Every structure is written in C-alpha cells, then in structure tokens.
Image (cartoon, rainbow, N blue to C red; front, side, top):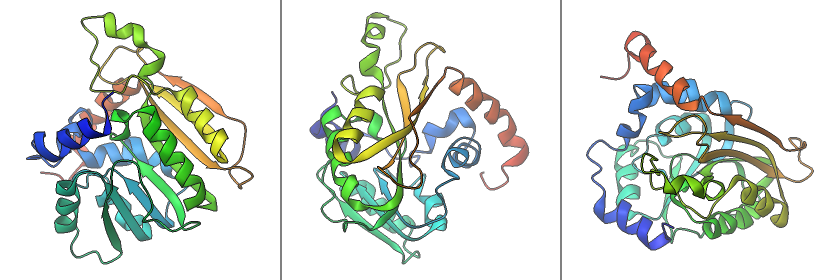
Length: 252
C-alpha cells in the first residue's frame, strides 16, 4: 500500500500543490539541477525521441523538460487537478496531449506508438499490481526499439526497515521490489536490462527505491540485466545542490 484510491485522494484532494512539486527537488537545489545532473544522464541513450509518454507528471516538473525532447508528448495522471495544471502550464505547446486515467489504464495510447516511457518520483507510491498492469500494457504500446525508464519502490525487499523508528518510509509502497519488476517484464514480453537500487532520504544501506529500464525482447537495446547498488544517491544530490547557486541562472 498505498492503493490507487489512496493515491487519488492524496494527489487530487489532500496534497497542497502550492510549489507545483518543485519542493521535492530541494535536495538538488532546483528541479533544473536535478534534471541535468541526475535524470538526463540516465536517459541520454533514449532521448530525443519521436513519441514520449510520461506517467504521473504531477504539475509538470519533468514535463517541462520532456516536451523539448520529442515531437509528440502524452501525459497521463490519475489526478484531474494535475492534468488541468499541466494543460494550463503548457498551453502553448500543441504537441502535448493529456489524459486522466484510473491509475492503471493506458487504453488511450495506440499500440506500437511509443519510443520512450518515463515516470519519476511518482510510481514509488504504486502497488506491485499497478506496475504489473502498466508493464503488460506497455509491452504492446512500445515500438520495437522503444524503452521504459521507471522509478518505483524497492521497499518490499527491505520490510525490516519498517521496524526502525528513524527510518523515513517516504510513503513508499511495501509490495513492490526490483526483482518483481524484472519478473513482470519477462512475463509480458519485455526485458529489464538495467536496475539501479538507491537510497532515498535514508542512510546508504537503505536501498528502498529502484530505477529500472525495460525494453521489448529482441530490441536493439537487449542485453543481460545489469544491477547496481548505489547507496550514495542522496549524497550525490546534496553535492549537486551546492552547485545550484553557482550555475542555475534559470531558477529564482
């Protein structure tokens, strides 16, 4: 847990979006620093791309950058409030389409139409069944050489941490693991080729999150799964934050 219903209640009704989600980039200094120092280096093999899908964009923290890396961008979120905020924020960008879904359906996406799928800092709150459903659908939505970058929970592999009072769960789902992601891929015609296990707001041995890259089997990206344990992820973020005042001239 949290369930789809709990996620919808949280992001549609309970959460204060006054800072548009930018508050979650404070560890890096600014969203721009987080994007260029942390995210883009991990995505650079797959973008620019013709067609991109972003799942759970929130108020568009990453949509802002993805929109300039494709000819067609589709954003899908279970919160109508978030989709409306994105529509307003990116109203001048005619190559973006918007959809409110039920937290698991991608019926609005055509088969064999996506070059790249991206989701960051959102599906960490999703149950294993949601990830399995999304991957099953994406196996049909992706083009032959398309790719998925998905940030999800790995807390299910470290349930022992829940007993420690100092542990920060950060509303991570307890059913999802990196291993399950790989299994889900294999059962749906996809192949997980890369996983980076990271700590999040916790000591270096608390690898409660995972960045997974998946591709269709027999695509040009196919290779044996490579797994890395990165317990220095938050230290990297804090190092980037020290550079933000020196180099990020776009943010106030």
